Amino acid sequence: MPELTAQVARAVAARGPYPLAMRVRDELGDLFADAEFADAFEARGRPGWSPGQLALVTVLQFAENLTDRAAAHRVRYGMDLKYALGLELDDPGFDASVLSEFRTRLVEHGMEEKVLDLLLTALKDRGLVKAGGRQRTDSTRVLAAVRDLNRLELAGETLRATLEALACAAPDWLAQAVPVREWAERYGPRTHSWHPPAYTSKREEIALAYGRDGFALLEAVHAPDAPAWLRALPAVQVLRAMWVQNYHRTVTEAGAEVKRRESKDLPPGRLRLASPYDTDARYGLKQGSWWTGYKVHISESCDEPDVQDAATGQAMVLGAGGPPPRLITGIATTDATVTDAEMTEPVHHMLAARDLLPAEHFLDSGYASAELIVGMKKNFGVTLVTPVLMNSSPQARAGAGFDRTAFTIDWDKRQATCPRGDTSTWWSPATLRGTKAIVIKFDKATCRPCPMRDQCTRSKTGGRTLSLQPREVQEVLDHARLQQGDEQWRAKYGTRAGIEGTIHQAVAVTGMRRARYLGLQKTHLEHVFSAVALNLIRLDAWWNGHPLDRTRVSHLARLDLSLVV
Image 1 (cartoon, rainbow, N blue to C red):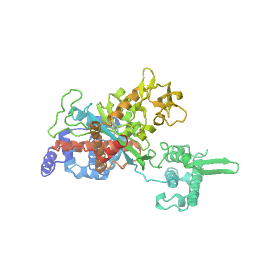
Image 2 (cartoon, rainbow, N blue to C red):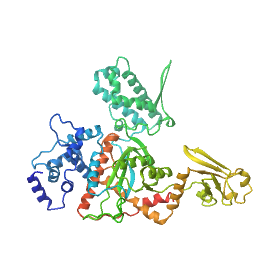
Image 3 (cartoon, rainbow, N blue to C red):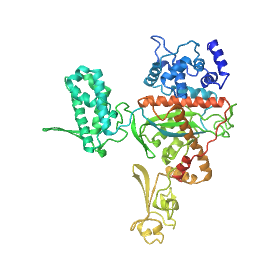
Image 4 (cartoon, helix red, strand yellow):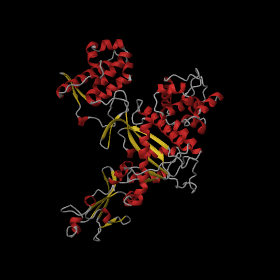
């Protein structure tokens, strides 16, 4: 640290709130060492900016939600950033394009999570994060950095983008392969710059014209006399995939006939491209809301001040700033079609890799199933605190008659006993909707004369049938259903609601709801830097002695419980 920079920065900072950037330098020192990024930066060539400094600049950029140009401007003129980076007062900083190049290098070398790993390692050494205790996880939607397009606009814009790429890569070949003047009028303007016709027949006519032109261009690119490298252009690959997904072409002696695929004939959402510019973005649906882009899953610590350390049995040591802050321990980014339940196990693998598995993990019902509750306890030693779906049998839904809980199950004898004392005659393993199950049947001769038949089954001729999950799963499910009806459990589950505040902070402070970059990897990199920025903001408040706010159970959390209890 240059002496003059330290002296002047501290003198200026004494006149107001101590800046976050300076506090990070004072408390954490050289957090991002250059050696940690050595694999992405060669030793040969002209000396460049320190990758560790660029990592810190990027984190602080997200803490203030700045653009690359604004972040470079802050480094050039901001006294606090010069202090944090250890620069001379007259250091001119760097060009804004350096930040983009830095992010690209991290993605190319698989170092998207490096800054979060380094921060959590430093915090573990200080006892601010640890395995055991409590954590909570939730997800939110992320809008891709592309425009939402309907199928007509998507076809036109994909073809236009491909022609633009070919015009740059092989202008002479393109001039000979397609009618340039006619296509320039049709595909020159972007699709959002004009309004499509109001009539369905006219829109269909335009869509078929796009389809025929797209197939003609693909034929030209794959012709024997065309340069072979044209087929490898990313834009051409996207065009080919988009046309396979949206059009049919039948070639007969009379010629080629092009048709658009019907809605029922489209590929599943997980495979369907939503933009020619971001091929990782997908159409998502959650709680009735549609969007184009991704989902981000955020995990954070949520220990209460009186929670004991799981490893030592001792009460948690509180710092001068009060209870330790709730810190983000994991961040995962997926395309918009991946369900929360599909991410339950990957999230635990991510936490295990950092040696930060909790003892109790608070999740909403979207992440949970009886199988996952059993699996996470068996494989990771983690107890999932989460609501489960209640019994959906007609008797349970009506709240009358004998549902499954009215029957006594003897797993050892493979037999069930009904409320009147009659026993089942059939016990058979089965597969129901792709899930292992056990089907139990009672003899119709026993059920037909039963005076309580109307309260037990809707079958007119057969006996009562029960469907159970395998023993271990069913017992966990029954226990969870019993627990979540208890007021003490519901009060405990209120801890999960705090993750909603974290999501709000991430959206409000770092702009996490809208992706800045194209592609899943760069969007995940953005989310990782956002998570580190939020952690530093929370640490700064803790270092300054701000008390930890207690979490209230929100209306959304109550709704989540009401849907399953």
